[in-house]
Image (cartoon, rainbow, N blue to C red; front, top):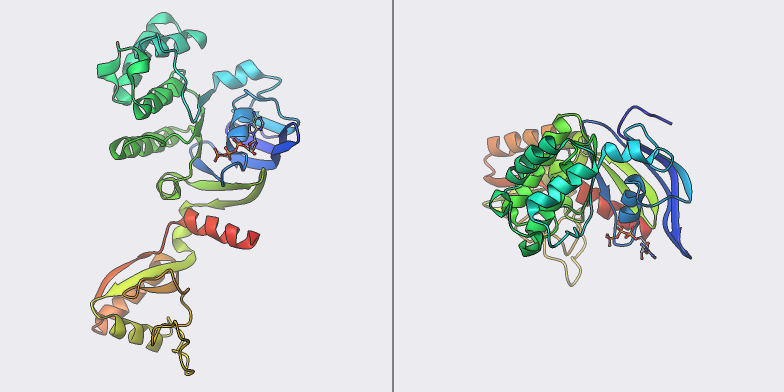
Amino acid sequence: MSTVGGIDARGVRRAFGPVRAVDGVDLVARPGRVTALVGPNGSGKTTLLLVLAGLLVPDAGEVSVAGFDPVTQGLEARRRTGWMPDVFGTWDSLTCREVLTTVAAAYRLPRDVGTSRAAELLDLVHLGEYADAPAHVLSRGQKQRLGLARALVHDPDVLLLDEPASGLDPRSRVDLRELVRRLAARGKTVLISSHVLTELDEMADDAVFLSRGRTVATRSVTGAAAERRPWRITALDTVALRAWLTENGYLPPAPAAEPGPMAEPGSPAAEPTGSVPPDEVLVDLDGEASAAALLRAAVADGVAVSSLAPAGGVLEQAYLALEEERR
Ligand SMILES: Nc1ncnc2c1ncn2[C@@H]1O[C@H](COP(=O)(O)OP(=O)(O)OP(=O)(O)O)[C@@H](O)[C@H]1O
């Protein structure tokens, strides 16, 4: 088992009575990278994160977090792990500042370090004006932000974030994304679960997909720019665009047979029906270089292309492909 920082989990299982919440998970999350943990409701994400945080003992498997086993070396592992649960329970009678200084004391930080760390983190998550307000007055999104600050108090090497963006307003989501990227740039290992795949797309370097308690796929997010995937194109004249794409081999020739009763005349056979608005065309392209080449050629031939962009994010496409496989 690797002990070189990051997270390394092999064959992890955890059941609750007859429910096999985690039923054979393998996961590697590397330092300096953001790893997305993706899966449908009930696929075992929270259970796995609790195991990694040392808050649940697995029934089987090997786990290393920042080089330590959260079960047999719990103290060492927890000292290096920041955990943000999906719902943050606060001690309601404490102020926001006291919540953080109490956590700092629990991690045995010297009092003055805890005090300055609390002030710094409250500013970081834009809760400075609530520093001396009782935590129970915070809104749900503000509580999430305090939860994030709490996870960072002891400057952990590994961050486990369970649905950190839930309840956050758009500005706070952007702040979260930037903060997560900064933490990774400083060498932290970040494992983050979310259902909002577009958000993870912009944050994550790697992704691990869970389904029914098992790892079903792992993939790189950053490497996907060069991969073959569908792109969405629009032009001022859709008919001319379709004709050009067909002529240049991007779309198959329109079928000679009579279109079916529901088909639009001239709709290309390659496109999935029902999901593409009539003024958009989907084509499979081998990454950004191919997209740039298509755009250049179309414009040179006088096709007034008005937009060209990947159809959906990398994670969304990978997720939907897995769902397809399950059918
Ligand atoms: N304490 C518990 N007791 C009994 N069953 C549990 C417990 N915790 C989780 N489970 C079950 O384990 C399975 C996995 O739950 P888990 O919360 O890990 O999923 P999740 O992927 O985090 O889901 P979501 O996306 O909805 O948050 C579910 O079937 C859930 O009902």
